[in-house]
Length: 295
Image (cartoon, rainbow, N blue to C red; front, side, top):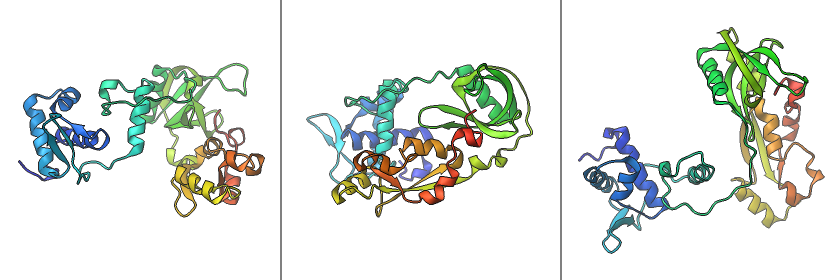
């Protein structure tokens, strides 16, 4: 049996990643786990476990009393980099009903709760039409309800990307009526009735293609101990962290991080972080109504 990872088929490599995921997060794995997760036979599950031992003999040992393989004291990942974000994303997806329980690699879900987020009413047919237009470089005619008009109206837009502002999903598109690139909320697209070829060029959307780097640091009025905690919370290095965001999403990013107001307006314990390069960012953080975003 070859121990060269480059010889592995995708399905085999995925099962080896699963073995390693279970060893790292759960501390144990056995044939039944592989059989249940991937629908493989007993023989195939045994082969996968033996293949994994061939690659990483120190990563797991067989516990005869528990009749399962357990994580070895010399465990070192070979197929995946342990990622807390990936684990937590799976946990949230299962708890929120986005991912079926049997599709998760987590064996024993810990109790979980999150602050509620309003369900955004994005119609699947609308989303399919927008994604199709992006793929085919087409313009579509949408009946759109903006807050600047009392009644919805029809307009032609040429979408080229999908964006999420932390709460709502948008289509980034060229508006043929206003001749400018804008954000259109998917939930406000009431109807789509036509499509045509589009001459809009995504590379001309400067706000979308330009990145802005936000440099954040602990609020200067926090105590040294409090500042260290905030630095850990945000993964800061040397007292600051850099967050890259598309200029089209800058306004939303600042709002979500609580950086859209004067830091002195709230207590340091509530504000927690400040924008270190505010002078470079302020002129570029125009609200949607001023820049043509979020029609």
